[in-house]
Image 1 (cartoon, rainbow, N blue to C red):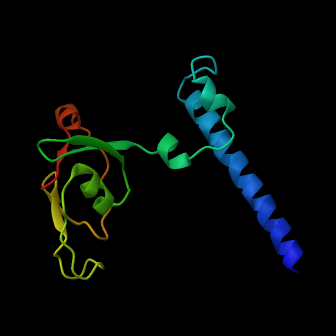
Image 2: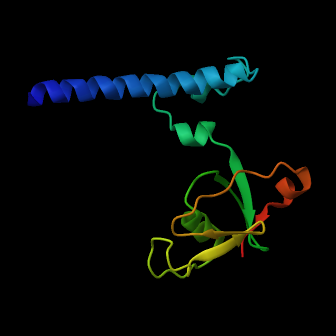
Image 3: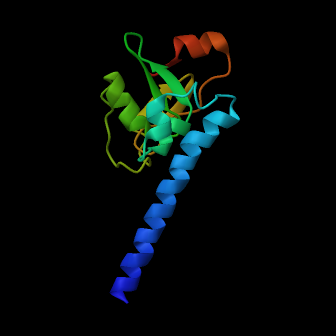
Length: 131
């Protein structure tokens, strides 16, 4: 039973790796890139991290610093990258101590996710303000 589980797990890992490689190569081709226009490392790379390849980036700013983070990633981690120290109490989002304002909307940083990139070009260039 243990050997069968290990074998099944290896097969699942190989399948997952193949799917990620397929997505990394086929997705750009679906967007109109030819294999010669794609970076050689992307085509030949065996291990691919899907989120960085496939997820849209959201620009965030605190007035001084501007960063791009994947949408749906941790708001707390994004605040740390921006250099914003967020106070926390419960770490569950119940108390509201960790609330930050992102582009005019309140998000609880300890449980919240980075919102999608804005569609308005001027806001996209400046980035969403985090307070």
